[in-house]
Image 1 (cartoon, rainbow, N blue to C red):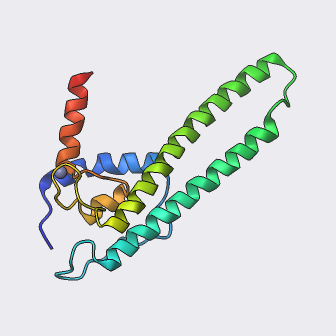
Image 2 (spheres, helix red, strand yellow):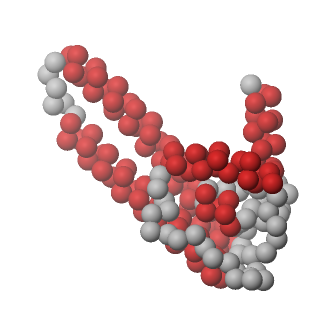
Amino acid sequence: MPAKKKVAKASAAKVARVGAATTSWYDGFAPYKEKRGEEYMNPAQIEHFRKILMSWRRDLIEEIDRTVQHLQDDAGSFADPNDRATQEEEFALELRTRDRERKLIKKIGESLASLDTGDYGYCEYCGIEIGIRRLEARPTATLCIDCKTLDEIREKQVI
Ligand SMILES: [Zn+2]
């Protein structure tokens, strides 16, 4: 097993935070245990991430369904304009959250497709292995931690 760079550790907290903000996709999934000398993205690992991604996507779809139901139930049930204003704000917030979730579902779909093509788990920019632990923290990651960090620095400079 290759020794992981220190950089990965420094950003781990951030990765975890981003992951936590989205959903608890990891419910019921134990971290993958690599065997000594095991090949990266072998069939067992691919299966591991396929299960995680599919379960995560299923949870998101269920949550969207629940929200749509909730919005339909509540719509038009307030006669008072003040109540209605508050309700509309809540709806707007809900819809923004759903919009994020829909984008995430699309990303998960792309990750699942890359599992089939054999691209999953490798950095889009430099081609190195993203690493199992980073992928478990962020299963839709397409960049290694170094490229991601550079990307974020560049983004900040633009702003
Ligand atoms: Zn990279």
